[in-house]
Length: 107
Image: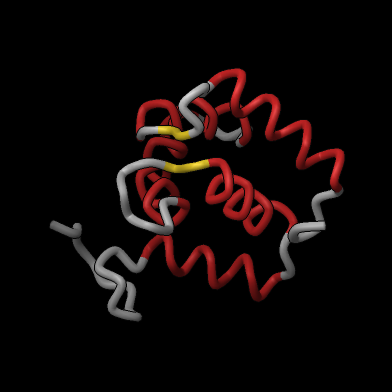
């Protein structure tokens, strides 16, 4: 089991992920489509956080979210304990990965 996901849930996510993404990875545009389906929030709110979440899911910083990164990120933000979810949220907003949340945009 991974962060509260059962083996059946992982298999189901795997099948769905590869049906929609045969190359096994999501670029930013594809990630936005899936993220909108996973989060039932107003579109303007999702647009504000989607790029931050993409960056946090893209653990190896290659510009794509592979299945393992997607599964881990989804599990942490939806099923992890409070500390894991807070750490994950912090990573989303620590734009330059310096350990601080600062005002402004990353370059």
